Image (cartoon, rainbow, N blue to C red; front, side):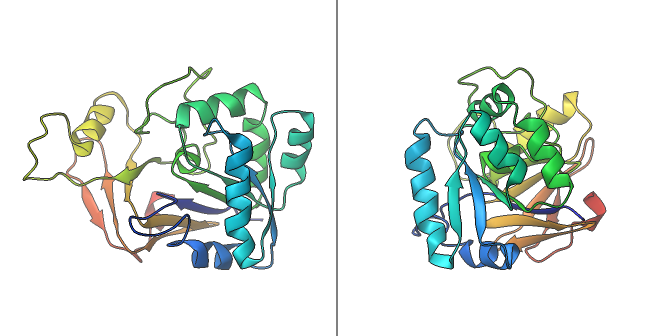
Amino acid sequence: MPRRLLLISNSTNHGQGYLDHVLPEIDAFLGPVRRLIFVPFALKDREGYGAKAAERLAAIGVEVRTLTADEAGRRLAREAEAVFTGGGNTFRLLKALQDGGFVPILRERALAGMPYLGSSAGTNIAAPTIRTTNDMPIVEPASFEALGLVPFQINPHYLDPDPGSTHMGETREQRLKEFHEENETLVVGIREGAWIRVEGSHASLGGARGARIFRRGQAPEEREAGASLDDLL
């Protein structure tokens, strides 16, 4: 069975509620699957986060169970019909997954065809590593190695340089160029309101905004919403 991934840049768009901008896409992506496991580990309040996701996804008839960091949670992960990993701090999320023994379970299940959804931090961990996250390392995971469900790095919440800004710090583009001073893997910067959908050997860019492709030693490449990303797989 081919891999099925929905990798969302952000869970909340400006002026909208939680998952409003992507809920129809989630509904279509899940198809007949009406139950999923929600991974809340990127936030401190795991119980509250799980309840929030369950309430929102109930609007499309999806039943949610929240993953717990114990043997019962590992059983849930092994048997899940689908998994949705929420956003928050990527370092905290990855450390919790590593400490709980969930990384190999989720990797195996997702690569075998279980639908995997992620937003923000949950999208970051679908890449080979979390080296292109925007988050602060508030905790220290055992390594930066993530699920590796796609062969490219992802930078959610990608922000274009603002020529009128007086901010003197590095732009996101400069940060990603720094990544490529030390690493070869290409990076997809997905703007807020956008997502990547993978169905087997096919990938496409969805949502209201596009993405930028960063390759080592090359100028960034623009991809519009609706574009194919097959060449990146």
